[in-house]
Amino acid sequence: MKQIANDRYYKNGDRTEMEYGAVIAITGTSGKAARIREMSGENFLGIEERIIQNFRLAGVNEIAVVAGPQKKLVRRLQNHGAVFLREKDPDAEMFKLVRKGLEYFKDRCGRIFICPESVPFFTEQTVRLMMERTEDVVICCSGGKKGHPVMLGSGVVDRILSYQGEEGLSGAIAALGTEPLLLETGDEGTISEAATKEEFAALVRRHDAVILRPEIRISFSGKQSFFDGESAALLQQIDRCGNVREACEKIGISYSKAWGMIRLAEEGLGGKIVERRAGGKDGGGASITERGRKLTDLYQRYEKAVRDFSEDKYREIFLESGFFHREK
Image (cartoon, rainbow, N blue to C red):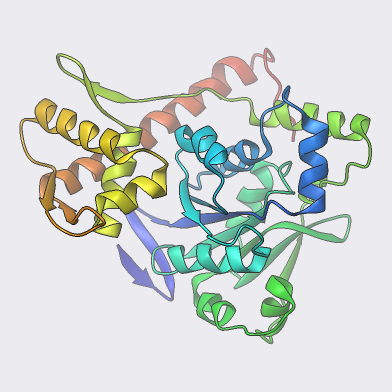
């Protein structure tokens, strides 16, 4: 990875692309989020899953869910490829969760999106519009009303983190002393105003049409399947954390399952991908080998190429034929 003008990029084949991250803050105490949960019941895709899919469809692959000790949430979302950052205080306010997410991403991503769980109905197109902008702070709007997500450039993250006032994220942005870009998107989902179950159901129908897409899961197999997206995510987190137990917490799997996945991958590949250093209450340290690091990088490049091809063919075969309709 190299840094250019305070923005972080990565090499993807012959292209150099911006790295984007997204922080989803789940307070568990938001009145709006609680109302949305009540209206959604069990018949709709969960609001956290919707937010993750919105970002994934736009090409944001680094997603962190920041929440209190909610084990059910971790289990429900563990197959969606997000990283979990746990906040010990179950009553933590949104800005505290946002800070934890920004700390996690600040040295890795050139642009970081922020979204609370109470705004799940924005669209892929809104995220893509924001990704076209280069301003330090971009706030999406609908009908002149500010909404979410918000996008921050890496150059202002440290100043946001150093904010000591009591006005939360909006106060931290105001303290920067520069006018944010208010980007009119026309996307009603950025403000998620649904006062009744009928209005909520209309938002759900609209959003369901937007997020409909093919789901591709890639695994490598020999005598048996031995490496997949969850394996790649585990190696990536071990590389970042230097500790298998902490890596497990980030992706929501058990310690024993992680070592089972590692052993299975090493048997399938015929070589070491993780080096373990014994000792300590946290299970000792660990690092991935050069072979493991290369495997992770190549897997992610291959996965992206397959997903891009799949999306192109989905548009060509299903959308252009009119069989499915993706609303704008």
